[in-house]
Length: 259
Image 1 (tube, one colour):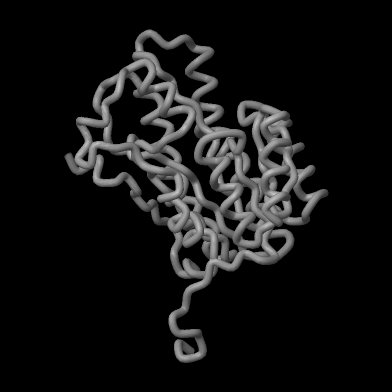
Image 2 (image 1 turned 135 degrees about the horizontal axis):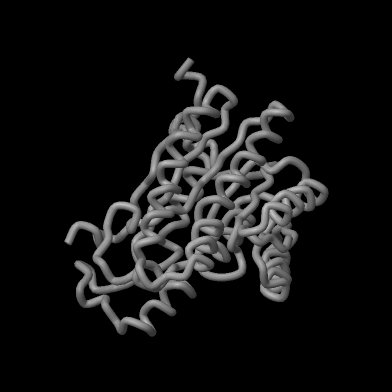
């Protein structure tokens, strides 16, 4: 009954949860891993750069959290599945998945090599889909509820023609993946949602600004977002606070797409 729930019914306590974050060696993923650990989750930080994973784990542990670093290449199915096995060996069943790993294409569509097309699709969409399904399969076998948060982008619905067409396509796929997998796994109490950030400070965005110059004057608030401004949305979707929310993609773009 509703009156059995606390007032207000909200909590960001992730004690007892095991969270896997892809693309955690830099940018938003690095922040997400720290935020989840600070909220009580045991964190598996994944990425391709071992030294950066070790540095992140050391930072989380120094802050009083628990974490391990697992090398994972989202273009390699064996690496994805093997990395998940390592995660489970360290902390048990993964109950929170944050699909954050992604790369830009940074080229006009007609100038892209087939190899680059494959790498962008595999990193941004195929790999996350494979990982999502495997995490869900293990949750279902363990009869455990779970949370999956897929990092899309405002570019899934907004494209200005500056040479990231495939990135836009893959992020639209991530948004739709969040919606359809939520339908499939709702009966198993696995909530699947997405976040569609605008332009936020990150390694990827810094590289884009180096190529294109400072474009913040064209934005309504003339600034890039601070990754810390995503903390509350991430925690909401990963925590008990969003128990009835699934199949939703939350836009967090500082008004950038409203121009």
